[in-house]
Image (cartoon, rainbow, N blue to C red):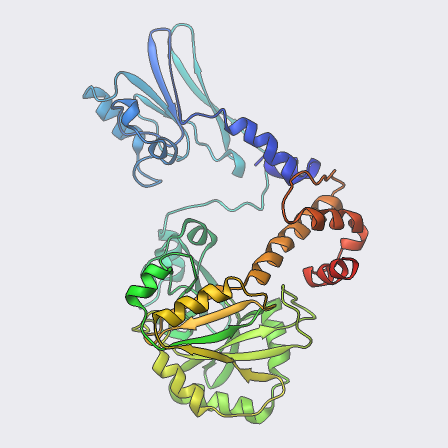
Length: 472
């Protein structure tokens, strides 16, 4: 909660250097004795105290059990059994009850709660009190692993959907047309909490009451090098042929039929800015093409998946000259696809059946087919050194296993986009910015500073790249 005030005064890299000096001095626990009593301080709280050398740093920091586990009561019971080496415990992390020999100092101070204070007096008495915090960011949301509120609000008639709703790594959002959307959240992404539920929660829209799937995208699939998508796994499990498609640099668009009408959605909502961008391009698609797609969706109870490209309103990293929709796949509106990421046979049959000509909507481009592991190996090896200037490829094996391969050009400019955003933000707030790190982006960073605050305002990474390449 102190980060935001620091960012108003200093550039992020400067803050990182200062924080590094602090956290290098931090320890996972602190044990001390005062007035004849022994105390052990950790962040997460322990259930007992064996030899401290045998307790992992993770247990001391993250704690043992679930967030809501009453660790204070457990510790106090173990203290009475002689399992705590006579240490009185002090911890934070989880807002639970104190035990007779365990004190919790978590008071949600950052959400307007209390700063908890523990005072050990000279006579050995221990006093705990709280200082109310009235100055805090009221836009922060209180994290919770309590699924009861979500279930009570969003419960459907489908047990599996209810299980997904209750999952702490899945965000549920109310939408139009009596729908709710389910998508894995940032915590799931950052902590790589992938399982049978979270991989389904990507562009998934179900009926608010029945839980019936009305719109859906692919099961989550990964970049080459993420999760288990590596050469060893592919050599053992990939089935051939593997089809290689060009990957487009836009955002996800979904179309399905609800109550006889075409409904458009983005990954998590049926309204908002990105849906409006999608809608504006969709409205320009020829009527006969839209009629054909509507008929296909109705007859097969499926969602059409698009990549939406809008260089005017949503520029990414790869430059496009005009807005466009790319038809990627057809996905049946059911929860279980029965394969990895897509029912390949279902989609391919409809892709072949749906023939049309359009100036603004085209099918995804098939680049090549790989017939065996050697061809796959050489393809990936070659593309890792490629100078091609687009995002990359989507590979799909014969069983519906999909993965992405990002080209070096895209990864390089994605990193530079991060630097553009950092410097633009810092300069707009009047912070002092210096280029200190000697890396492959050093010259580019100096170019950003040369452009200055006013010129950087409103420029996309594509605009900046063109200026940079023109000067160099």
